[in-house]
Each structure stands twice: as structure tokens, then as C-alpha cells.
Length: 240
Image 1 (spheres, rainbow, N blue to C red):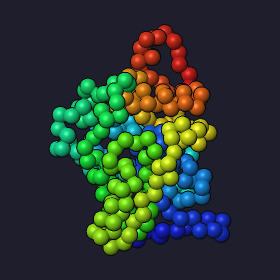
Image 2 (image 1 turned 90 degrees about the vertical axis):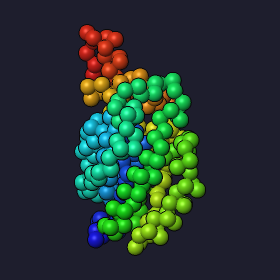
Image 3 (image 1 turned 180 degrees about the horizontal axis):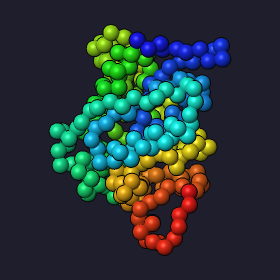
């Protein structure tokens, strides 16, 4: 079993696992937990989605940029979902919802509970008593509600040998508040696209639209390289 606490400068630093995706919210939460004095164990779960490679790259880049003795090397778990989603846009990368689509358009049935089960069992097997997630107050889905997480905690506690607490520090916060909190962090190392082009944000999908809006909300220059903008100005050099 891993120890749930470490001693840092004479003070206990409580260990928390973090389900990280490489996007703005989970990366800001990673840096926020570190800044709060927590020891963080990032967990990324490979599901076979079309943007997985870019997400993994972002997780590593952001972790390197905010490196800390309290940041543990990230764990990668496998949970392929192609047998469930088959020919879905999330797997084949074709026809991803555009920037003007509703949030419901990007919902992946059962994905959040499946990710939670995998991460939660890992935590229980390694003596980690808290698992952090980064859903916001604006999340419209039923599997991101207080009721869902309370029920999940009870169920996973009954199924496992040790209790597990689901921690959601951003649950009462808006996107604007979260990006404002994270504006001092290397947000250019995050990734939020569901239809990447040559490793870049496409600039046209639902998540790219959300990303652009997030920077606008706090009047912060967007450091992201979007493939759509590079293609429209092929002779212009872009600096981050």
C-alpha cells in the first residue's frame, strides 16, 4: 500500500489522486492542489478516443511545467471503449460536434462512471482515500451531480475494502472563476479539442469553441494554436 500522507517541511501533506484529462479544468485543479500543499497522484485513463494522444501529451507537458516534489509521476490505466462506442465520432474522429453545438452533443454515455470505477478501484488498492475530479457548476449531465457522486461513494465503499471520498473543489465554480484561478499557470500546455488536426486544436469543434470562450471570459490572450486559423493564414508565423 502507498502511504496516504507524506511529511513535507515537517508538516503532513495529504495525498489525493486526480483524474486528469489534460484539459483546462483538470490541469488547473492539478496546479491548484499542489499550490494548496497537497501531494497529487495524477491518473489518466486511456479509452481509445480520437484525441487521446494529444491529451496524454498535454498531461505530461503541463505536469512538467508545474513540477513539484509533491507531484507524483502520473499513472496510466487502460479502459478501451471502442466495443461500446463502435463507429461513434469519439472513436473514429469523424463528424465531431461543431463549436455552435449544445453541450449535450458531446455527451458520451456511461463514460464518466466507467472512468470513476477504474480510478476508484486503483485508489482503494493503493491506500489512497481521496479522488479529485474537476466538474464545474455548469456541467449539465446527471453523472456530475451531487446526488450521483454521493451514491457513487456509497457504492464503491460497499464494493471495496476501504472508503473513498470523491473531492470536487470546482463543483460550485463557473468556467470564468476556474480560468481566472488558473491564469498564472501554463495553460498553453493544456488540450481541449475532440477533433485534433496534426496534433493541434482544430479550432472548429465544440470543445475548441468552449476553450476560446473560456479565455474571452477573463480577457486573457488565448495562447492556443488552432489548425483552422493557421490554414486561413498560411504565410503568417504564429508565436505562443
